[in-house]
Image (cartoon, rainbow, N blue to C red; front, top):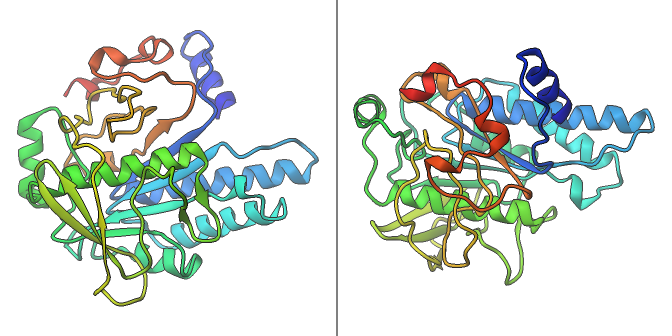
Length: 309
């Protein structure tokens, strides 16, 4: 990835930069097919390099999907390639790439998605994400432009007040655990006292306390929906992070947002724009917050006209 980035930067006359090695992919809607697709080909590339005798460590810490709508067979193919990566080094835990979905109940925008079943088929019994009760397609999409945001809500559904911050808390905790290397390949979830994220067994309900109220979500997979796992919120998010702001939370213990996150622009409700995945960069990016937090290597790249929308 660094090599591809360097090549692209040189072609446009930008200086050479080095981005952090560890990364997480996040995709919403159609981007929920693009992100795992990229992850699958990344895994296949590592397998090919290892077959040639090269040193090819895995730097993809995980993938998070937001009401993903991947076209078939993107997800099964991607998960198959990730399984081949695990098998290429005798099941080394460092090669396990967790893929978590934060979905909404059936709606007209995700009606063609089989992501929950595809995740369960590929990784039965493991933690693969949740479906937010009362959720809509826009729970994970927040923008800086109120007119665009309102239009997106009219098209894709108005979220309950508690659900967008709940999605932020879930995603933030999982991503922190991914970067910390705390995901157990056997169960697909973080184990022990040092976990930042909220997990459960297939079919269980988790409760997420937010400043806007209490939200709940059902863990993807077969099982009774009667089990309740009460999860206490570490700290309510201070405010929703706008998707058009390059943001990362301060590296403090009382903040639930991932400590090393780079959020790239997504502008609803254009579906083709939602296919652009977010790349969350890992260790090496200092704790930052706000529009002035753009890393130097990124600030010197040409800006897309869409980023000022």
